[in-house]
Image 1 (spheres, rainbow, N blue to C red):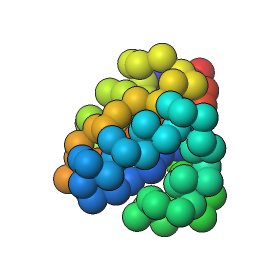
Image 2: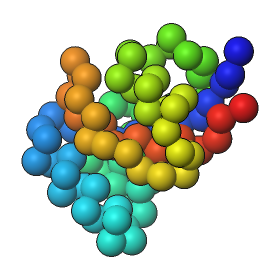
Image 3: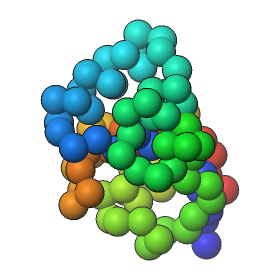
Image 4: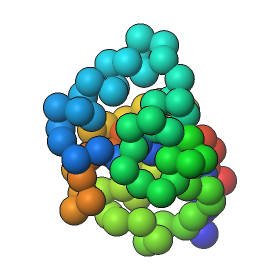
Length: 92
């Protein structure tokens, strides 16, 4: 079964997620923005969620992590928790 490592930034609104995505696209550091803006406890680690397998995260999140290109910031992705910017660090 595959395993992946990802980090994310979780915010409440689509607008906030889009603004942060622009800042990342313009070269700002993902980890620093996660520490400052994410509402997830993972923000203490720059959004790092560590390793997990398919089915451990909600479906919309899994779809990005296990199907989209790695090392690219994807999103905003809407889940019941809010809006995520997701970056898969590796998948094996």
